[in-house]
Image (tube, rainbow, N blue to C red):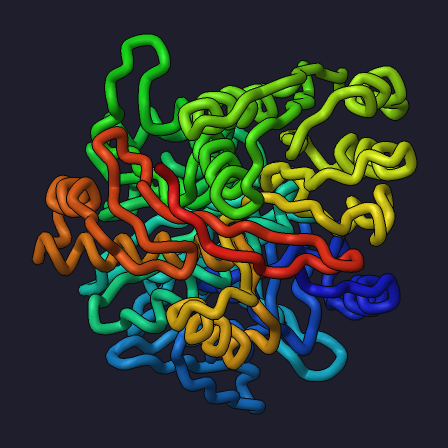
Length: 497
């Protein structure tokens, strides 16, 4: 988002020539990249006004100002656009067109122009879902031309915005590394909402996209998947872990065009069971699940099956309710039971408190969980010392010594000035798998790409080596993370059975 101080908003509001209701505009995003303006864009009488020079140069045109006539001419290839301050008429290659609003000159000599009208003159579209004028970016989407449009339906605002923006960075980097394929990214924000994810896909399909990446959450993917299925356009779900994403839960039928990039929730139970038996040499275990959580129950069932199949024995099983804070009753049972390993597949809110109370009661056996533990707050809740000898499964670790991970982390840091997280890695792998399918199919046809995705085999991704299963879920390795003095440390990469 553009940072808009109150002073900047007031200054721009006072200095516009004409009167009328004025408010600061949201961020303006061109093909996924936020544009930085020297003068804050505004919304005036419902029309978005932006500084001419910045937006026109971003669209690849040269700008010429005639002080005598107070006109600006923008030139790009064989296009000439002429605008005059205070005049609603503009001229495209000599032909008169009418603008939404007349251009205006403000205090520093900058010309403010109606974004939508001028963007249309350059053959690009302005797509803005007006769900939240304070937060939702205004998307400018360039016409794909000879390039091949790929849709990105993503949570750029709302509760999942932090994860969505991170995933977007991974997507952008992967596209940059595959420029030879001529893929053009078309980004629409779904605002972390399933209904709006459906609307975002409707818009994306109008651009004749060859594939869609995203959304991020399971609910948002399920919100738009029927549209993509009807259009026979492949959808890659980077981070949706619910089992029903790729398979109809009622009929067992695999959705022809829906593919998952991350592992699904139950695989985490299998990975942790393998780790407990093979690495920790556990022969007995206790399991404490969150009784209200489908996520926790899914991991529990998978862990039990895998642990028992490996010759282990579950000697105690109990549960708590979402929001519980006092686990004394369960912990007394654990204290009086011999076991080698405790599986605690829940989210960090309860897991952190449970671990703190367990260690205080002298329960020092190794404890394992799922990626729901991956939050800085778990250290605050449990305490750094209490988290020693605890482990959780995850999709990615930047500390993984794997060559592909190291190269990705290095490229990402050079490009963004920071290290990638799990969501950036999943976004990166989503594009890389798509590119692999396009190359294998030697086609940009959506149905050929769908077939190529179904045939992905032994693909080396930064989130693990993977083969696409018959149910369109990747068969891939996962990462075991260990807490040491409150720090997450890469332990090992582990394969499922």
